[in-house]
Image 1 (cartoon, rainbow, N blue to C red):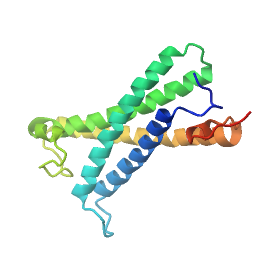
Image 2: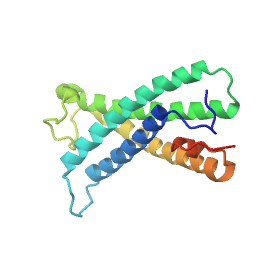
Image 3: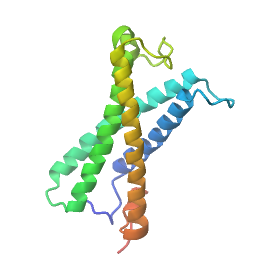
Image 4: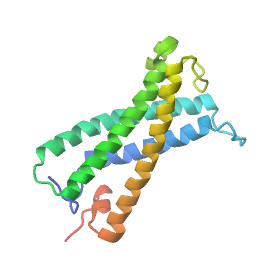
Length: 184
């Protein structure tokens, strides 16, 4: 078990920062792909941005599954935890679960009905930005959008909590996530 004053394992840091980077790309690509009022010149068209959104979303979900499995093992194996550590673990589990469910919900919605083959193609043959005809797909995509907003709010809270650790608590948690070891 490692405390907040120790450097986090490299795998934890890599999973954390790669997930953060991919999540930023997912949100940016979604904004660009689905903002139909955006009249500025684009580097990529909506279809390309949607493909970027979709692929980085699935990659984020995959990394989240791996990270979740590692975190569950860590949580189960560490019996001596304070209430604060248990709350932090629960928060991370919530974030990871939201990332996984949000991505899988849209993935299954896009692959349902007549678009089943689209689930397993990197570059789908359908217009991805268009709406599907089936009613259940609309409901699943509405839930995807709602969960995406919940995830964005949760990530903002997560960043604010990290800043509280760095500025107010000064417990070295943020330094440990960038690979620096604090000497006490």
